[in-house]
Image 1 (cartoon, one colour):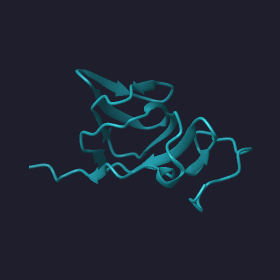
Image 2: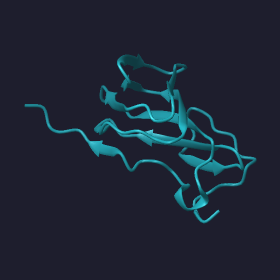
Image 3: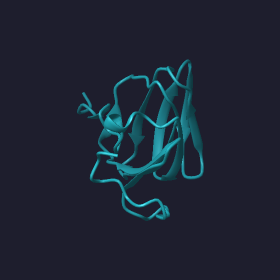
Length: 122
């Protein structure tokens, strides 16, 4: 694997832990913090993403469905299904994302390419 941020595969992630990332042969796990000012543009992935809410609140749109997610909730984004999110409230949201199957090694690493800063309210 080419990403220098990949941690060893014995790491555990807890709700209060910092961000982390690990890649296995058949899947990836990406634990990350989304700032209170963050959202994503609508996007798709070739892989399924299963997102576990660790802290905070987020609004998700997956296909034609919408979800308001809080700690303990799980959001499933099937492969090639358009989805987007927005952090709700003033606190960051921590998620853990299971990506399966694993992406090609040159595409692996912590996610975030689709994350944007929310525009100011009008």
